[in-house]
Image 1 (tube, rainbow, N blue to C red):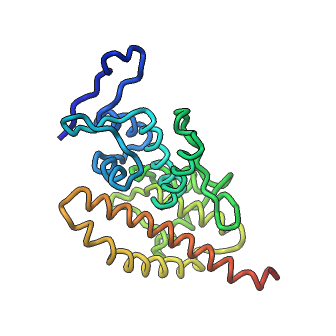
Image 2 (cartoon, rainbow, N blue to C red; image 1 turned 180 degrees about the vertical axis):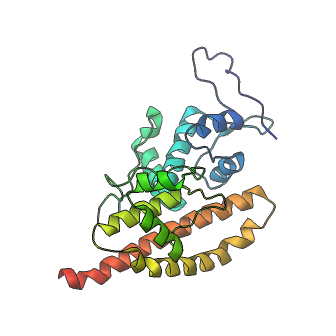
Image 3 (cartoon, rainbow, N blue to C red; image 1 turned 135 degrees about the horizontal axis):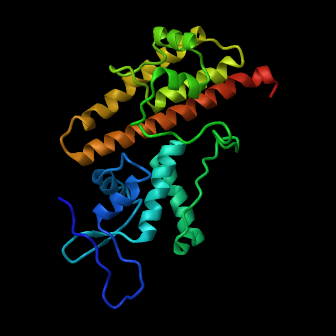
Length: 251
């Protein structure tokens, strides 16, 4: 059930009114179209935002709260950061006094060696609702049609039943194009698909019990758990590859 819309508090002329959860959702969906009320409640339950409550128990969000939510949603979408890392960043933000300035924070995910992943290499991840045809995928990723056909044959790249590719398909195709510049061909990527399928099987066992529940909060937790597992898997894979290359690089 939607909560009542917020009104400007009496005796506070010129101040910015508090907002209901529905109004906050409308604000955020412009930039984060997949956001839901269940998602906002989940982030509150995780302690990432603490809206005020009316005497009747309705949530009332300030503009600082909206800035915090944008912080969290941007970090998840653009940098795949797990909630525990985002929580630490928010704590640093609070400690620095930045929250009182009502300024939207700049998010930078720093890797293990101090590098900024994806800086100058890749645009922020697009919405899961993105739909690309074959021609547009080829144009935007830099691969050619024959490479696309080979990736499909190997199961590295898969379209939906209607033949559309989503944002993750674009990321995969763009990565393949980048690897091709170093002489790595689609046939070399079969192992990636096999390894990914093994991880999917493992992670699915962990999130399926939550995803099957009818409670929206449980399903939101399943989605967040999957996101964190993916982020941790990426960190582990990158570290293992770096360790493996040290002897080759003489480091």
